[in-house]
Length: 156
Image (cartoon, rainbow, N blue to C red; front, side, top):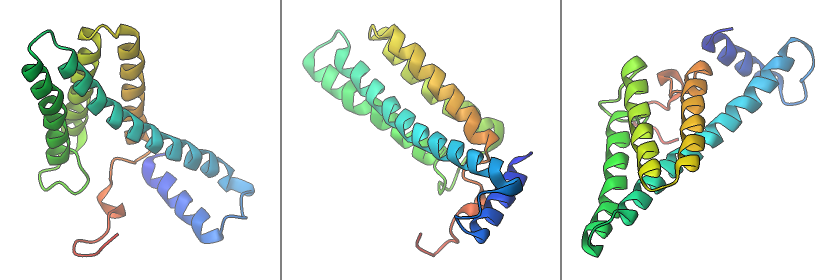
């Protein structure tokens, strides 16, 4: 079942109402639950990315001023890169393999930051969750498909 079929079945389930959970649409409920959990995990991974970069900046063996600068500038650089390249409404939004590469590059920087800060186990857990989440996001068709975004000029 490809992502278009998943979205069509989910739309049919929405049209039938929440009480119609039996029959051939049963697996769609499972997919819907997985999709919701995956979006929650994505939010946690994105927050952990910012936190790990800030932690790295604060833990660098340098002067207090440099640590403060790195603790603010490093997460800020990741946020700017994400918002310019990967955000759903970014004008220069990457798609396909380029988007996956950019996303995994940012996650790799956060993994390196955790590792170099002496948090190797946390880095392994974070990297595993980030990769699984990135791949699931694409497999479930959740990478902000243009059809599911509000029309320009309208408010969500």
